[in-house]
Length: 211
Image 1 (cartoon, rainbow, N blue to C red):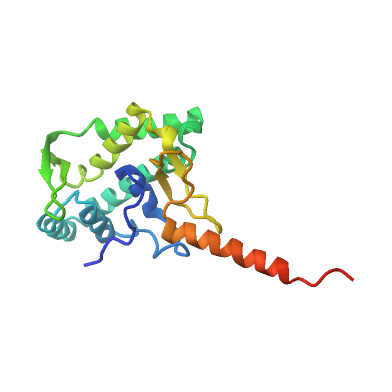
Image 2 (tube, helix red, strand yellow):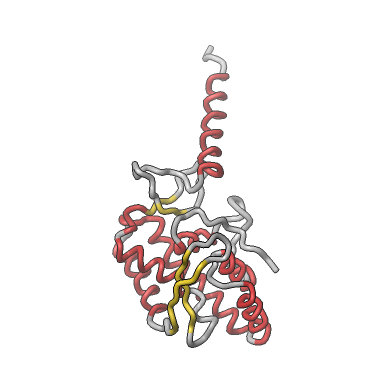
């Protein structure tokens, strides 16, 4: 049973979901490379628990075409949300409308019951969605609702793409007081960027003077 491979550092569910498509050189690959990987990410995000994940895995064996379609839809949603996350408030009308179309398409079929539950891991409270229809189709709804909240509350002004060198594809919500956070994670990308700059500066200092 695979584990989710992308840490949750973006500050919002939909941004962490966008970050699941990291290139192999930045992490361990795409968390949505398989249906099992998708379920692992959902469990790590506390969107499903272990018993529900096991039930979905059994159903995927019985209905492989439905599982494949569900995975394709998750990738489709992510593809629409990534340009919006990368450009934030500066996204073009075309990018914004494409994301909005995808958000409304998914929300249009979101039938079920919304609850507030307590996370057994740390005692925090989270919103949950219990679908009344197709369990597969409902998996991506919490992600889409998170993106919808960002649009409604104006949070796009605080969404950033990591400025690490070499480039990092992660996006995150900047909640710093100054509003000038540059890296998705200080230990991962901040220190790496500073180390790279230091090595460059050392090489420059060591260059022999021109003859």
